[in-house]
Image (cartoon, rainbow over all chains, first blue to last red; front, side, top):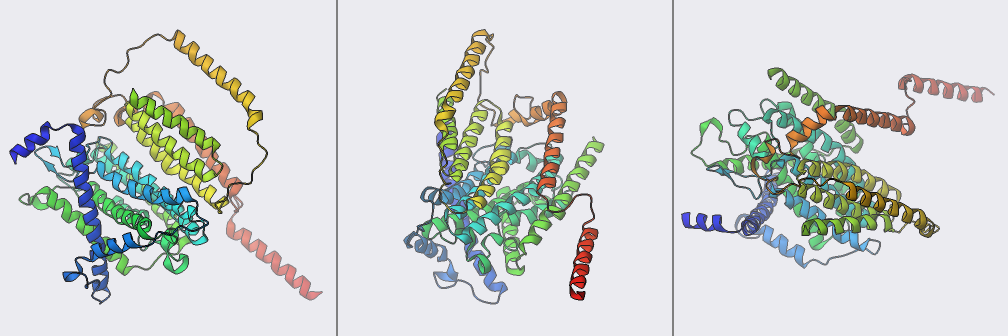
Length: 335
Length: 201
C-alpha cells in the first residue's frame, strides 16, 4: 500500500488526474445504474408490486439489460430536426452532469482530499457548471422540431432559471456561516455543528429547489407524460435518449452530494462515531438523500405549471432572501 | 502562451460564428462557446472568481433567456427569412472601426510603460491561494467591489432596477398603481350595464 502511494506521489499530475477521473467515472456510472434499479424497486414496494425481478437474482442485472437495450435501439432523427444541435444537446447534458465531479470532495485522509481537484471557489464552480446543464434540455427540445419537445424545453428553461435563484441564495447562507467558498472548507466548518441546524430554512429551500432543478416529481413538468408525451426528449431514442436519462440521475446524485457537503456535514461523523470512516458516512448521507428523493416521487402528484412558477417566485424566493438577510445579520452582529 | 493563442483563436472564431450564423439558435451556441473560452482565459489570468461569475451570470442566466426567447419566436427550425444582404454596406464603417481600434492599440502599446508581469499563474486554483489576499480571489474581489468600487456597483444596481421596473411597466398587462380588484370590478360593472342596456332596448 505504501509502495503504491509512493508511486502515485511520484507520478505526473496529469496522470494522477486521469486515473482519478477514470475511477470516479466508473463509480458515478455504477451508482447511476443501481440508483435507477433501487428507485424502481422502491417505487415497486411503495406501490405493493415486486418491481424488476427477472434479470439476475433480485433483478440486480437489470441495469445491464437496460443498457444493452438502449445501445441496440435504432437511433431516430426526425426530418424536421436540426441535425447539429439535435446531436449536440445530449452531449451538453451528459458532459455538464459529469463535469461537476471534478470539484466534489468525497472524504479526507490525513489532510489530503479525496477529490480530483481542490478548487478554492469550489461551490461557485459547481453552480457555474450545473447552470450550463439547462442548455442540453433547452436545445434538445428546440432542435427536435416538434411541438411537445419545444413545450417541454420552454418549461424547463423557465423552471430551472426560476428555481436556480432560490437555490443559489440557500447556498449563500451556508457560505456566510462557513466563511469560505471551498467545499472542503465548508465541511471543516461543520465539524462541531452541521449546517442544516442553523440553516434549517436554507436546507428546506435547497431540498425543494434541488427537486425542481433536476426536474423530478413533483416538479417534473418538463417531461409530464400525460400532457407532453415525454417532454423535451420525446423525439430522442437509443443512446441519445440514454444520455439524457443518465444525466438526470447523475444530476440527482450531484444534488445529493451537494446537500451532504453543504448541510449534512460532509464526511464528518455524527455523535463522535469516528470508528466508521468518513467516506462511508458520506455515502450513507448521500444514500439517505437519494432515498428521500425516490420517496417523494412515489408519494407526491405533479404540480400545475402556473402554481409551480408562482410558488418559485412568490414564496420560495422571498423566503430565501429573508433567510439570507437574517443569516447575514446574525453573523455580522456576532462579529 | 500556447494556451492563450488557442483560446484567442476559439474566442475570435466563436465571435465571428455568433454574428455570421443564419439560425439564431446557432448564434446562441456560438456565444455559449465564446463565454466558455472567455472564462478559461480569465482563469489563465488568475481571475478565477471573475471566470466563474462570468459563466454563472452570462452563460447560466442571460444567455438562457436569449435562448428562451429565440426558441419561442422561431419555433420552427427554419432559418429566418433572408432579408436584404446588408453586409457590403456595413463593410466600410466596420473596416474604419477596425483601423481605428488597431491604431489606438498600437498607440497604447508604443507609449505604455513596461510593467512587471505576473511570474506565476499556477496555483490559483489550488490550495490556500483563495484564502490569502491573492489577486482574483473571492475575498479580494469582494473587498474591491464593496470598498473601492462601491459607488459604480451601487449605481449599476440602480440602473438595473430602473430597467426591471421599465420592463414591468412596458410588458405587464396590469395597470400599475391601480388596485386590480377595483379595476376588475369596474370593468365587470360596465359590462353588466352594457348588457342590461342592450337587453332593455
